[in-house]
Length: 266
Image (cartoon, rainbow, N blue to C red; front, side, top):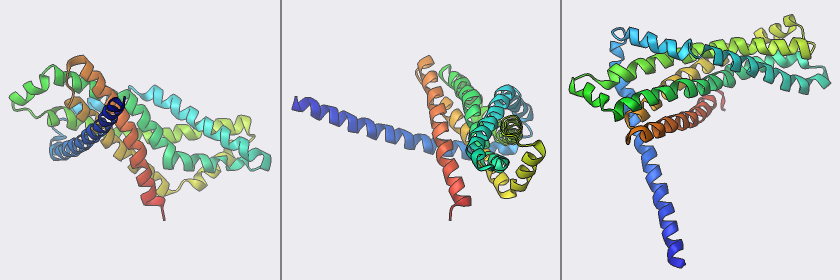
């Protein structure tokens, strides 16, 4: 019995150590991959067709989902804050709260989560399938860099489209909040949008867009890295896709916190 407990503890510690080493190795691989992307970005004009194609997939193909989520995010924020402010006859301030929340945190975060699920997972699955079917090896044998050919266009595309989608989320979220403010909180559109414009600060806007830019580069790099490291056939592709989604989500939370602390912390 004692020996069994001992083996269980040893295996548990071994698993923790192995997982920690895997995480460190993946972080190092992602950093090196991103540096390669920066190096090959000089060929961005040459790969403009592929970049535009990836921008189409990341932007147009996710337009409906982003629209629905952005609209209802603004509506939920307006309803929750408005109901709390209404007993004090301060529901007109809902516009201030909506735009501050969207521009600083919610718009880049929500948009990143949508694109992780819709675009990042697809990147990991596509490149993972190419890896396990030895297409990546074939590219290397033909002296074609997989990073230049596959990864760089995807990173640039998502780095462009995530800030664009964030601006759109800010706009549509404020519209959704205005609908709730008018029909459920008795706040006129004039008052609502006056408060929004009064609270729309340049710092909050550029910090939100900076987050979106960083998230776009980070999500695409992590997704492509997991795809390039996929092994063991279809099972490995599924695992790589899952790892890319989980890792991207965690990194968005962590990096988002540190960017906020950097610009707003004292």
